[in-house]
Image (cartoon, rainbow, N blue to C red; front, side):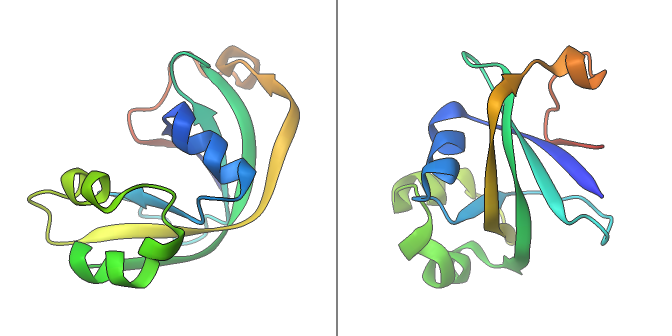
Length: 122
């Protein structure tokens, strides 16, 4: 099973450059059979630019989550802490086997009419 995630372009590009090894989320999909994340780079790119396999998901208190993943976060600690402000639990999706698409794809080519607020099962 795949899910489509909306990710800001600056972070989406870091995933495929290899400098971001974790994708952080405040909430996550409930299904346990999700193996692949398809990346939609939000405005101004507004295209599906690639995918990656899930190498594991850590759910933890944000302070502990940062201790475990911060070295490969691809974002600053301040930005991370601000993102998880007022949250007791956060999620870190380990990025494995990235596959950038040769030709980025518009959402309508996938029969999707609007970008997901968080994620969409594919």
